Image 1 (cartoon, rainbow, N blue to C red):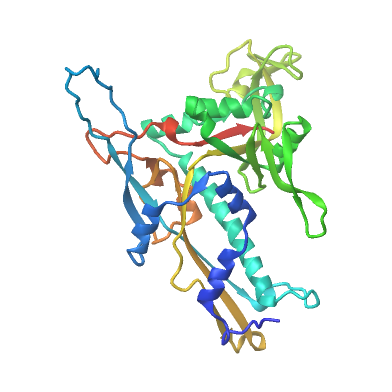
Image 2: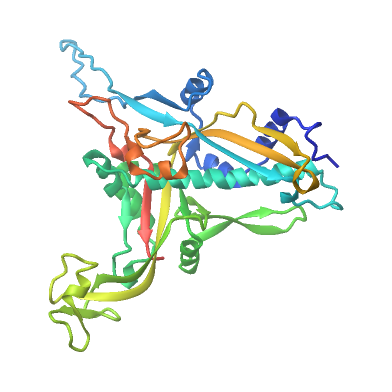
Length: 396
């Protein structure tokens, strides 16, 4: 069995070994093409030791109107717009004492192999949480151009009547068409809460992927397929509970209440009460009253939605022995520096206190903007339809 011993521990080798442990979720993100490498990002941070932020070129698509090639007309040349993209390195660190790790002494598993697997799984969860923080941040962007992305890449059915507020057969297709039009084919992956996946199962819309374990038994993965798109199921997805919610509905819908002033009659509700939720509600409309409504956010990613690079830490892992505490204990320190850069969106670093952004920094919409040409007088942003990121907000 390997030793939990700082003297015989090789931090560089252990860090590389952790990286080799398969991470199912990240591997599926990569296989879906939603996450891909970017040599330009790796190059800029590899050549600048300690650098945590960089502005790199982001090249626009070829455009312009062709001339008639008739042997008489001059062929005019145009220049492709070059945009600027801010990219940040996200550094994280964690330490564990030897008692934090569980291992099977009789199972024939090397202890350090077991520790490496546990750490790889831990960082895999952290990486996914980081991506979710970034997604929350980019959908919190403000400003005219940024809101074109936010509004067009959001399908919000949470304010619909009870029957229409849950995801159904058309939800995914509607969301990606709204976001990217004829580019909707680029979307390849959906990340949902288990409550959403359960609803999809009940509607016979979700098929689970299978794997065969070491005993030859076929089992379900926590991965599925919805309308041909890979589905990752994660209860870390954003949820919000609204204690009281009014939604518009038809007079014939179950539980429909007529909005009225003063609204004290049978089957009525006071307009002033509903107006706290629906500001433009009018007398004569019908609403449903929902208590403790849970609002779910599901994210849809397409090819190249995120550029990913593992920049690496100078010392990815090391051990230290404390002879005093608890009669002596050994602590393992683990560090990582990675880039998760959403396509077509720039990190501005407007509200970041340290060299590495916290989850709160990543979730702050002021730190993000659409990639643009950097001009203050003639600012030009990339077309939001080219960004393969969208979301569905629903009540189930």
